[in-house]
Amino acid sequence: MKPLSLALLLTLAPFAAAADPDFAAAMRKVAAKGTGKPGVVIHVGDSITYAAPYGAWARYGEGQTDADKAVLKWMHANAANDTDGWHLARTDHKAGGRSMTACSGVRADELRAGGKRGLPGFAKLLDEYKPQVVVLMIGTNDASAGRDKKAYLADVSAMLDSALEKGVVPVLTTIPPHPAKRDLATAYNDGLRALAKDKSLPLVDFEKEILARRKDDWNGTLLAKDDVHPTVGVDQVTAASKPTDDNLSKSGYLLRCVLTVRTLGEVKAAVFDAK
Image (cartoon, rainbow, N blue to C red; front, top):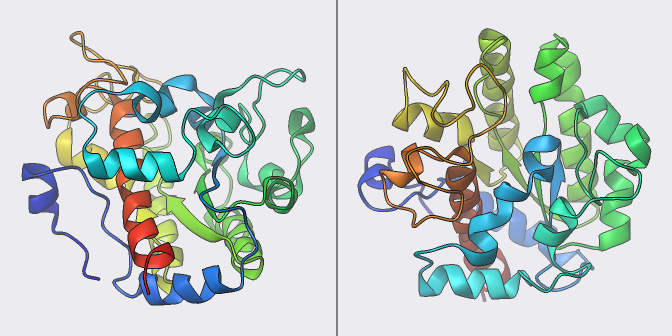
């Protein structure tokens, strides 16, 4: 399964290419030992995952293809229960400041260990919700805190290994550019790409896709001005708009969601549907 070229991605449809063309074979071996609930995909991370606009396009977006609808049905989108990872990621928890699987302000070390605002540790989340797939984006708050790259990547690597050991397929996501810690965020993302390649994981390269569309003006378009969070949209584009190339350059949450859904479509076809 060969990764799509960036030129093709930009001219046809947003589709995050695999970090390693052999991810399918490697992840089939992982999935074969898994005991997760069919089609359960959870989304784990910080406020960029907790934010309701992240899953808006998946829940009610315009311009979904038949393939998009099929993979969303597979992952129980709009079931609004513990099998629906979009629901788990956005639904407010009584503890405040978090959902069932994501927490505002959390760093990788805190996500790994658990405890911030009562959020269970990463491994416990896998045990609790029994997913077949986990989408992981973490690191923006680590960059804000100036955490050492080596320590940050060690935490991420340990979480990925925990998923692999449990038979859960991890889909790793790079973090967006950081307006105040640009070099550190870039270094983190280089490390995440290396982890994905080393472990033969599917990758949503969110940073690369942002820079491909808004190389010099992402600050204030795909990310809120001088902020670390993606935009809901500008110029009447929303997080649920049709995923045209123009719209994908105007809503950071639309871009992330569409890339994630279509990468999960790749994973479903190559790992879970493969004979």
